[in-house]
Image (cartoon, rainbow, N blue to C red; front, side, top):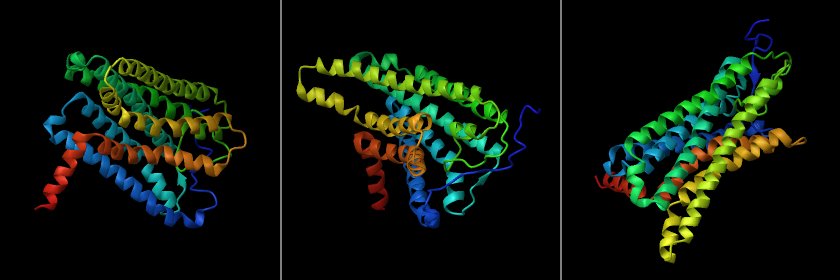
Length: 312
């Protein structure tokens, strides 16, 4: 038998929204609009941080990487979402499917890792503000970025390799509008225990990130409660609101989706697809909005640019 046995199934078939196939073209309008806003929003944040030297600080460097990660998630799912909803072309070759799930899972790991690093950033800024600039130097931030990228690649790369070694004999209908590892491996007619174990390991790494984020906020809360002034407490907590929103926006759909895949025996396909689409559409859309609204420096720079353009 060949090492890479995908010859039995020539195409996988993705699905849109069950029961609303007749409305896919209409649904493509808000979906395309969400992608457009997400890409423009994240590009705007990147441009503002790049051009404004006053924003060349650790917090904004991390925010820039978050914007890159969000754009990666958006662009990874965009081709199949457009093919399904706009052109009614649900078919995708196994190799293209494996490539897509590699990018989706890699950028998911990247975003999870980045949210963890950003929680450490907030923890250091609140717990030890006098040493903040000496702890988070440019060199250390560069090393953190490199570690983040390598971790994302190393955890994402085995996904397509382990899927490609499986045989796909009869079933070829996936349950999402894009390819996910846990979805594709269920179609295999050969032993997929390696995929199950590795998928669980990566999920465990993501949950470990979330546990460390929770621990960071416990330390932040302990530090804030030790501050005598109520106004200073609120000011310190207010700096964390954007990050807390980003964590909730990212982790709630992914935990819900993972739980439904593993534990729900009689799950509704419509609910699963809606949550899966929320997982890839909402974080890239909402993160730029949340950070622009809650981060005064970025909000002022963006509004300043808009007013200067309108005033010409």
